[in-house]
Image 1: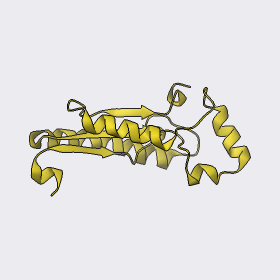
Image 2: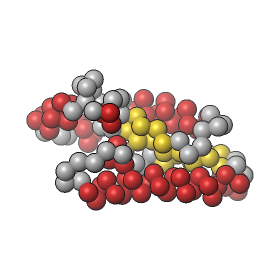
Image 3: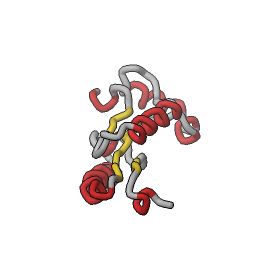
Length: 121
């Protein structure tokens, strides 16, 4: 049974990323699509609140994953050079953030930047 039919629950759109809030050269289409996920989250939040379904988004930066692991070493070095803490997000950290958004009953329309300090740099 879906959350909508139960009239309770939480939707987490974790398909967005840092590009939703931080632009860069050569990534116009990516930035627009990721920002669209954030706008979609806000609009869906308003539509679903009457059904007691909360809607939130996670915006991780680089995550330790197959995609990250397959990058050329010079690209990894360049990306890490833009992150003051010089590390990427661990999958467990993304999961912890998703649990926070899913279990906090007042978390609605949250857009959680989970990128260390990358979006501030």
